[in-house]
View (tube, helix red, strand yellow):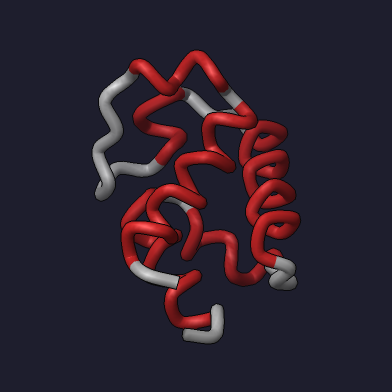
Length: 82
């Protein structure tokens, strides 16, 4: 997947959890929690969406790598086959 495709995949998973965020600016470096007041349930739904979209196992130990757009894209680009 290209970087642009990964960005769109992460955004799509994010907006499935909170569709009202689509109109909000998204700072790729800031955590979703800081930007949108994501709670733990929102984050778990986001992780589930990423898992369903990619088929990747996303272990809890890797959650810190998925807290922002920038980190999630970097993590997925490393884990997904080119």
